[in-house]
Length: 132
Image (cartoon, rainbow, N blue to C red; front, side, top):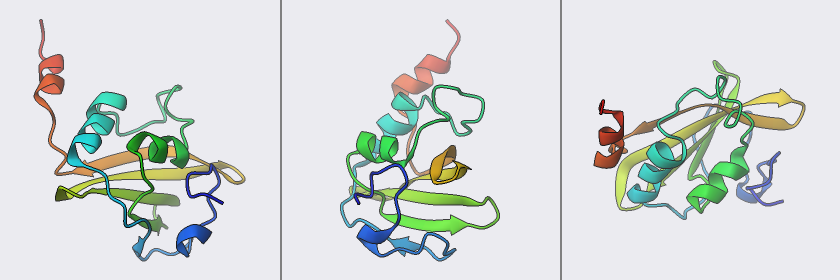
């Protein structure tokens, strides 16, 4: 099973999907530019997805396919009862993008929330927020 499948079982990387310990997944990393485009272009700065009908049904595979590689880290958040996947930029290792997935139906994990650290907001996104 490919990690980009909807109900990923952890086998490709030997991760424990119920472990709260951070576990390494893919060694392949993305770039800061891809994380910027993902956070501010594709997702338009959204961090909570429950209010967005078009985004809240997205799965891990949507994110992995858009970013172009599997996540670099995984852990299970007991507090949030969520699977958390993190992508790290190869050209800027402090830039990270984490996505939380909750189980809505048995075996179906959909995006719940996301957050980024050191993913710099591009000027064109800042400009789009200014009143005309």
